Amino acid sequence: MTTRTIAVLTASAAAVGTLLTTSAAAPLAGPPSGNPDPQLFKHPTDNPYFPLTPGLLTRLRGTDEGEHFKEKVVVTTRTRVVAGVTTTVVHDVVRRPDGTLAEKTDDWYAADQDGNVWYFGEDTATYDEQGRLEDREGSWEAGIDGAVAGIIMPADPRPSQAAYMEYAKGEAEDQAWVVQRLPSVKTPGGKYVGIVRTFEWSRLEPGVISQKFYARGRGIVLEKDVAGGSERFWVVSHTTP
Image (cartoon, rainbow, N blue to C red):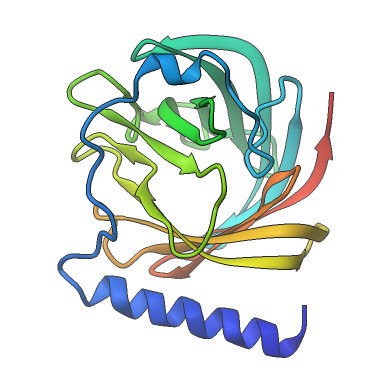
């Protein structure tokens, strides 16, 4: 990536940060009105930017508030029926350098007949350095207590699509804005081609904005906070089944 390109991306991130943090009406899309019709998922179409191939293993490295982490994400063969839809369980484990467990999550995703990937909830837990459960904040399930599934990756992601990725009022309200298509991006883990770049944020964490890069055939390859936080993770390897 050229220096000029980096400068443009940084400037864009700063502009979006200003937009979202200075506006009381930060959302660019309204909350979803209801869960999708299960019939839309009878014949799913794969989304190349968010593959759900069972056995796909992604390893990442990252830092947050000065701490280093290792992350392993596996698309499992397990399924879970959520709001009438059979979803794929994606298992995500974050560990500290000494191997102690920091966070463990099961996410539930499903692709519809058009190739949109929907996020139906998660069962998440964080742990302290002694291995004790700290909390389950952020856990939610579509169809329970008014929670509604959202689209985490559109079938044909184009600027400037915006949508809620999840909606459980007061618990999980992440939104995403597709801001750019790029031919490639360089990360500490290598160079990836066919890129969709997004900004993501939540009303529950005002001022925190994350920039994410999704590669065709790979999924997410780089994410970093551009305002209000210090989290940064990048892919170091993919293992396909």
